Length: 363
Image 1 (cartoon, rainbow, N blue to C red):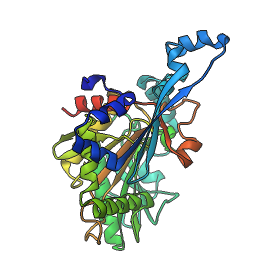
Image 2 (cartoon, rainbow, N blue to C red):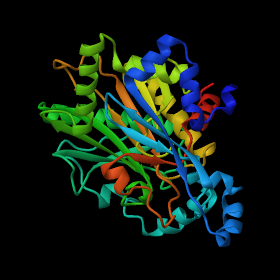
Image 3 (cartoon, rainbow, N blue to C red):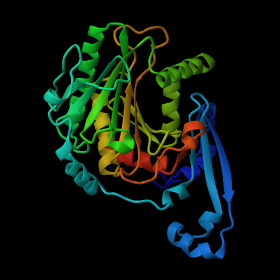
Image 4 (tube, rainbow, N blue to C red):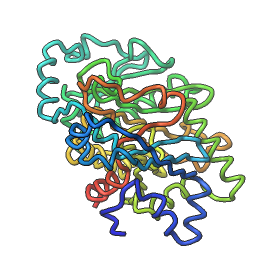
């Protein structure tokens, strides 16, 4: 099968076609189930179905892909038909026009006057400055306020500067409180992704005791996997995606379109360190989201091993970035519901198509 023509609906066929060793590796980490959804629409619905979905047959018999990561127990359900549901579209120009219209009431326009600083002061980057977050997630919780109001108008140099400034904040915060050493960088782009303010900004936190719960859960799952299989979980996870044509490596950074995403178009970056190449690849993925996939509301989360010395069990844990599309900023529907909260993620986008876009962007 031509890699460019692969879709998530073909996953069972693609896995079955793998050589025995890659197939066993896939089955060690993922469980794959195929379900068929059938329905009988009334005659009165047929014209609407034809118009909305292209054909009645596509609706009356639907192929549903259910995939579960057996190591982390992240799960996703794919049905390509769901991407064709009625929804309001907003292009980037309209999104940016609305953003700029709101800029006149921007509370982050004068950060030195209108935002507090951390007890250890501010970090000033070339394109950003830090502030102390008013309503904190943790004892050490800062903001990285971008000089440009528009969070979608970012360049390679700006992304690198945001990450460098965040890391300098973490170093200074750790010096202020050496017991705080668990760093997490997060960026919620636009309100649909959880941002309370339109002005571009990221956030940084440094925790005590142990890393944040989902990062610890991932680390423990990886340790259990290694003890049971004598193999590194992150290496195997990348290899599975590579075998299926859903991953690429550039500059020592492994990038994959994740098979069990929490929401749409989830990308994972795996790096040995928070180095220049990692920052470059993160920019390229975000630029691909914005320019090729027309994503405007997104989440970025970056977890790193503990600062300074590595406690037991952290030796092989990589720097991990996860990026996800949160949908159209002013779409009235929510992308999260009860299924995502308590069962498995329902996904409309096709990770094989996401992977093809990624490969083009990371050449």
